[in-house]
Image (cartoon, rainbow, N blue to C red; front, side, top):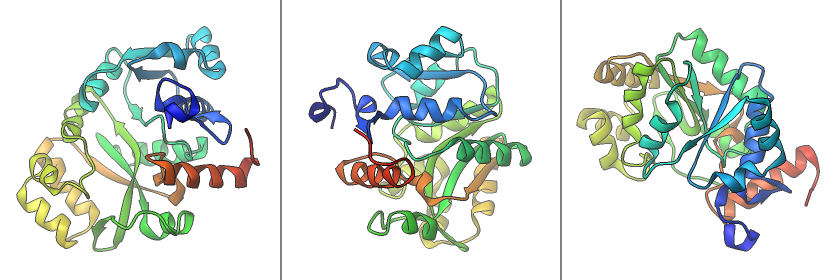
Length: 246
């Protein structure tokens, strides 16, 4: 995608006329619950040249941190010196709105969460993208998909980031569940035993902090730009709300 768009990195690929990272930064900055913003990047110059990023840099609201070899060390790099709580999202999360980030933050605060992950209901995701993903996290009350929104309530909660050491994507790679959560939680996860709240409570005991599932109101929040298909889906959904651009 980056080669086709003539840019150096995926996060600067335009989606409906706006580079992905610029779009995400703009939406995050427009959320009145969010204070300072930090971008973790291997190649910051191309990102810093985006007007919305340049403006926030000049205002002192945004800064960069060095991208590391893996996602966990990148999270630690981005968290260095920050004031908690901290919201984490990704540069390809193009369909989350300021209201979506606000909903996630408000629910995490209401739960007094030490750490949290944003989820969308299977039926909501499929309503937004009927021909999309077929695999979901399965619980007693239905299927859910990850929204690439995470909450760290304190520096202590950063140990929960170790869950992602192997790269996440637990639906595709069950062995990663065993390493992160333990064998019995793999069985419960694969069989759909128990509620998501119970599973998160068990994981909370494993990590020694309160980890909470946050169910969000819109399925589109679970759609990020992973490949050409999701790129096209994202462009189509954005064109419905803002018109075709670019």
